Length: 163
Image (tube, rainbow, N blue to C red; front, top):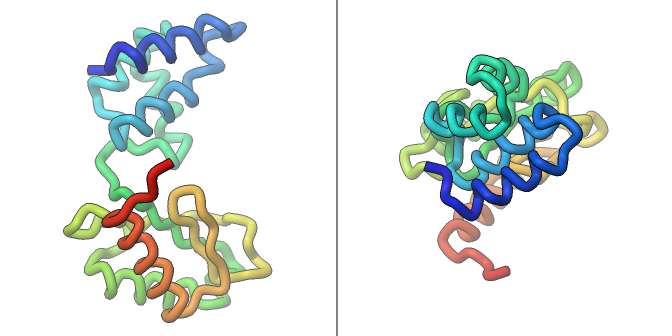
Protein backbone atom coordinates (compact mmCIF):
# COMPACT_ATOMS: atom_id res chain seq x y z
CA UNK A 1 0.00 0.00 0.00
CA UNK A 2 2.69 2.54 0.95
CA UNK A 3 4.32 3.64 -2.32
CA UNK A 4 7.96 2.68 -2.64
CA UNK A 5 9.38 6.26 -2.59
CA UNK A 6 7.53 6.99 0.66
CA UNK A 7 8.53 3.62 2.10
CA UNK A 8 12.19 4.35 1.30
CA UNK A 9 11.97 7.84 2.83
CA UNK A 10 10.44 6.40 6.03
CA UNK A 11 12.93 3.54 6.21
CA UNK A 12 15.80 6.03 5.89
CA UNK A 13 14.33 8.23 8.65
CA UNK A 14 13.92 5.21 10.91
CA UNK A 15 17.43 3.95 10.19
CA UNK A 16 18.94 7.30 11.21
CA UNK A 17 17.13 7.31 14.55
CA UNK A 18 18.76 6.09 17.74
CA UNK A 19 15.64 4.01 18.37
CA UNK A 20 13.03 3.34 15.68
CA UNK A 21 10.24 3.96 18.19
CA UNK A 22 11.15 7.63 18.46
CA UNK A 23 10.01 8.01 14.84
CA UNK A 24 6.58 6.37 15.32
CA UNK A 25 4.47 9.53 15.43
CA UNK A 26 6.38 11.17 12.56
CA UNK A 27 6.00 8.03 10.44
CA UNK A 28 2.25 7.97 11.08
CA UNK A 29 1.99 11.67 10.18
CA UNK A 30 3.91 11.11 6.93
CA UNK A 31 1.64 8.24 5.95
CA UNK A 32 -1.44 10.20 6.99
CA UNK A 33 -0.29 13.18 4.91
CA UNK A 34 -0.16 10.86 1.93
CA UNK A 35 -3.51 9.08 2.43
CA UNK A 36 -5.51 11.51 4.53
CA UNK A 37 -5.79 9.14 7.49
CA UNK A 38 -4.21 6.00 8.94
CA UNK A 39 -5.98 2.97 7.50
CA UNK A 40 -5.71 -0.42 9.20
CA UNK A 41 -3.38 -1.55 6.44
CA UNK A 42 -1.22 1.56 6.87
CA UNK A 43 -1.00 0.83 10.62
CA UNK A 44 0.20 -2.71 9.90
CA UNK A 45 2.80 -1.49 7.40
CA UNK A 46 4.00 1.28 9.71
CA UNK A 47 4.32 -1.15 12.60
CA UNK A 48 6.42 -3.48 10.43
CA UNK A 49 8.69 -0.61 9.39
CA UNK A 50 9.10 0.50 13.00
CA UNK A 51 9.44 -2.96 14.54
CA UNK A 52 6.45 -2.27 16.77
CA UNK A 53 3.13 -4.00 17.21
CA UNK A 54 0.01 -2.50 15.70
CA UNK A 55 -1.38 -2.26 19.24
CA UNK A 56 1.55 -0.03 20.25
CA UNK A 57 0.85 2.24 17.28
CA UNK A 58 -2.88 2.24 18.05
CA UNK A 59 -2.08 3.42 21.57
CA UNK A 60 -0.10 6.34 20.14
CA UNK A 61 -2.76 7.11 17.53
CA UNK A 62 -5.48 7.31 20.17
CA UNK A 63 -3.30 9.57 22.34
CA UNK A 64 -2.47 12.06 19.56
CA UNK A 65 -5.75 13.56 18.39
CA UNK A 66 -4.22 14.75 15.12
CA UNK A 67 -3.74 11.19 13.93
CA UNK A 68 -6.96 10.18 12.23
CA UNK A 69 -8.08 6.55 12.10
CA UNK A 70 -11.01 7.29 9.82
CA UNK A 71 -11.41 9.63 6.85
CA UNK A 72 -11.61 13.36 7.54
CA UNK A 73 -12.24 16.34 5.31
CA UNK A 74 -9.52 18.17 3.48
CA UNK A 75 -9.86 20.89 6.12
CA UNK A 76 -10.17 19.83 9.74
CA UNK A 77 -11.78 22.60 11.75
CA UNK A 78 -11.06 22.34 15.48
CA UNK A 79 -13.08 24.76 17.56
CA UNK A 80 -11.51 25.55 20.91
CA UNK A 81 -13.76 24.64 23.82
CA UNK A 82 -11.52 25.79 26.67
CA UNK A 83 -13.09 27.78 29.48
CA UNK A 84 -12.20 31.16 27.97
CA UNK A 85 -13.45 30.28 24.47
CA UNK A 86 -16.56 28.74 25.99
CA UNK A 87 -17.22 31.99 27.89
CA UNK A 88 -16.56 34.04 24.75
CA UNK A 89 -18.98 32.20 22.47
CA UNK A 90 -17.68 28.73 21.64
CA UNK A 91 -21.23 27.36 21.36
CA UNK A 92 -22.31 30.12 18.96
CA UNK A 93 -19.26 29.39 16.79
CA UNK A 94 -19.98 25.65 16.74
CA UNK A 95 -23.67 26.22 16.02
CA UNK A 96 -22.87 28.67 13.22
CA UNK A 97 -20.30 26.41 11.54
CA UNK A 98 -22.57 23.39 11.98
CA UNK A 99 -25.46 25.18 10.29
CA UNK A 100 -23.27 26.45 7.42
CA UNK A 101 -21.75 23.05 6.71
CA UNK A 102 -24.77 20.93 7.58
CA UNK A 103 -22.81 18.81 10.07
CA UNK A 104 -22.58 18.23 13.78
CA UNK A 105 -19.43 18.13 15.87
CA UNK A 106 -17.41 15.10 14.70
CA UNK A 107 -18.99 15.13 11.23
CA UNK A 108 -17.67 15.75 7.75
CA UNK A 109 -19.45 17.90 5.18
CA UNK A 110 -21.16 16.19 2.24
CA UNK A 111 -18.57 17.61 -0.16
CA UNK A 112 -15.76 16.06 1.90
CA UNK A 113 -14.06 19.40 2.43
CA UNK A 114 -14.66 20.02 6.13
CA UNK A 115 -14.58 18.00 9.34
CA UNK A 116 -15.63 19.70 12.57
CA UNK A 117 -13.93 18.64 15.81
CA UNK A 118 -13.44 20.05 19.30
CA UNK A 119 -10.06 20.90 20.76
CA UNK A 120 -9.39 21.53 24.43
CA UNK A 121 -7.14 24.59 24.12
CA UNK A 122 -5.08 26.20 21.39
CA UNK A 123 -3.57 28.96 23.51
CA UNK A 124 -5.40 31.78 21.76
CA UNK A 125 -7.27 32.92 24.87
CA UNK A 126 -6.61 36.60 24.18
CA UNK A 127 -8.28 36.20 20.77
CA UNK A 128 -11.18 33.94 21.73
CA UNK A 129 -13.32 32.40 20.50
CA UNK A 130 -10.78 30.61 18.34
CA UNK A 131 -10.30 27.65 16.04
CA UNK A 132 -7.68 25.97 13.93
CA UNK A 133 -8.05 24.75 10.38
CA UNK A 134 -5.34 22.22 9.68
CA UNK A 135 -2.26 24.13 10.87
CA UNK A 136 -3.72 27.65 10.69
CA UNK A 137 -5.06 29.44 13.77
CA UNK A 138 -7.98 31.87 13.65
CA UNK A 139 -9.24 34.03 16.49
CA UNK A 140 -11.85 36.63 17.33
CA UNK A 141 -14.39 34.59 15.43
CA UNK A 142 -17.62 36.21 14.29
CA UNK A 143 -20.12 34.94 11.73
CA UNK A 144 -18.60 37.32 9.17
CA UNK A 145 -15.06 36.14 9.90
CA UNK A 146 -16.13 32.49 9.70
CA UNK A 147 -17.86 33.15 6.36
CA UNK A 148 -14.65 34.70 5.01
CA UNK A 149 -12.46 31.85 6.28
CA UNK A 150 -14.71 29.16 4.79
CA UNK A 151 -14.96 31.08 1.50
CA UNK A 152 -11.17 31.29 1.29
CA UNK A 153 -10.81 27.59 2.04
CA UNK A 154 -13.37 26.66 -0.62
CA UNK A 155 -11.55 28.90 -3.12
CA UNK A 156 -8.26 27.29 -2.15
CA UNK A 157 -9.78 23.85 -2.74
CA UNK A 158 -11.17 24.87 -6.14
CA UNK A 159 -8.15 26.88 -7.25
CA UNK A 160 -5.04 25.49 -5.53
CA UNK A 161 -1.94 27.63 -5.69
CA UNK A 162 1.04 25.96 -7.32
CA UNK A 163 4.08 25.78 -5.06
